[in-house]
Image 1: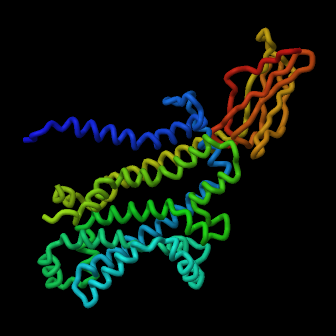
Image 2 (image 1 turned 90 degrees about the horizontal axis):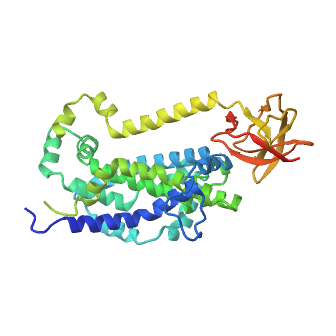
Length: 270
Length: 133
């Protein structure tokens, strides 16, 4: 069946995979050993590993509060992304006047860095009275253009005859989106969930600007605060990194199959 | 395969999927951990004090230091009984040090004790050894 043996490809991929996992392993190893990153010779296996650095992180800063804030903000961002992007993606699969201009506008906006729009974003959020609130923290990430295009690509793969049949059966446009398109676009939903969650979870700049009180800070801000508190914190710092990374990695591992499908749908035409 | 999936009842599909199973498992572990913590957070530190020959030392003063963010501060004392045993109550830290002293017998250097939660009940595995008396 295969003209060439596959093992060299697998071997190369395995080597590349290990190479990419080394930094993660190093963070994990340091979080349980506290070994200074500059120590020489470096030890591959941690000596006398323990979990006390994780305990330190838990008690040095209000980790639970930061975690709750990050979860709340990410939940809003994820829900808004799925709802708004699905609507926008569906609209872009329909024909309407100025569709090409809208698509061009979207593509152009992707090239504008967030830092360039941060002042108007701040002013708008302030006018809405949403500074220092969960909704205000999530607002700029409630819809992302990349995710709109993921939905658009996924919806375009649905045969037009199916949509016509649904319309003849009396389903409204809303019904078509939520009762037909979304169940057929699970991969796009998973991609939206993962991307919006990770972007929101790791966001540092916007929460730094929008939050006023310490109680509203998210985990990336907590990490910066933690660094300012402590000096000799190699182990605890890496433990904090693991605690911040873990939810994103877990979500990715849970939904990776749909995530990859969502990213590649529309990449090839059947 | 999709047909087989859809043929299962809704409650089964909602409960028996990897998202629900993983989240429920994590919630279960957290609940069990919190139950364990609530049963073992009385702040009791137990141990023994012996001299350099391994004999129990009575009436030695055992001191508890707790981490005050950056430095260790003295928290409380206990006196050993005839068997050299001591019980310190009221520890509310997760990062402590224990030391012992008896004039004429010697002094045991502070030993660091790391705990998994504040006020964890702990029994020291090795006795404090008084030397240099």
